[in-house]
Image 1 (tube, rainbow over the protein chains, first blue to last red):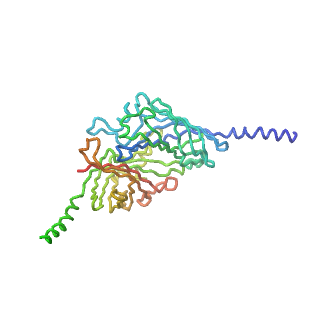
Image 2: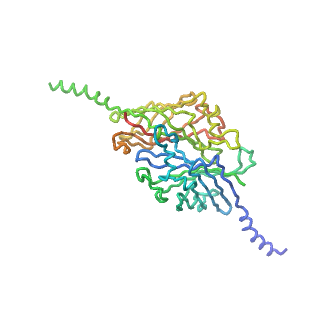
Image 3: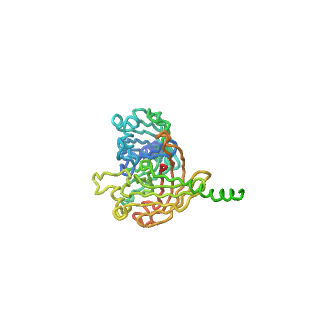
Length: 198
Length: 197
């Protein structure tokens, strides 16, 4: 084999090996939750959570690329007020009506994004599109914590990644206009997420 | 007479100040205590307690206040209510003696011991948290605070509301299960409302 051919093969092989590095992960639904906060009449921020989120992502640390897909069941929204008491409905019931998440017509919301900035070996920014109430708009998530490594619960046999993301949106951009601005238009998002390598 | 008038004013003033104490009952529907802690160094896990009861009193002129909150530990939820193929859910595990031991300690309480104001607003609450039967000081930082007529009642009802944060080590209260993989440092975040009596 000539030296030139070997160099040529090496050059051709390098991008291939980098291309072979993407790893696919599946979101752990028991440790992955989106939370949200909105202003309530100018007095307090009220927080809520979606209990059901599924998703997957691919990540290539060498190439600094990644893509994520999350699907959130809107019916699973909870805010700590799920019992009516003497009222006609609880806040969680109200949030499921067409005034807010309209879960009968739109049972899921989804986010599709790609990593656009990295900080060393960790993704720093994910730019994507959020589809809520059938409306798709850009959403940027900032990665505020990120770690990949062996899962200590399996003596390291399973590889996992996890972290926390934050972002914000205007709910009126998605047509959710009920009681804006008494109930805040700006919604802060926070997502804690863990995922296992396939 | 002038001397008599001054004496009257002097004795009346403390009475007027004492009359400015306002009492509030906690609104259970908008008062929610969230906590968060590290999980294996990967993600932060959050949970919450629903529907606390409590009361607070505030004297804006004297810049004093008292606060008392009672939380039912069994109301905890972390978004994991269904077992699926597992022997128990995380919420069920959190109710065992490994964590909140809700059978033996159905409530946790927070009672203030003092407050600090920043201008006219409540800024810091010093107090004691009783968890698992252990009482230790925990400071609550008021990150948002507003009092005014409740717009939902055409201003007939007067309310105060806001948000507060705090931190503690769960091991200080004897909750030592899984420390290391599961964080010892716990961060509290709460929304609160109270209606004036």
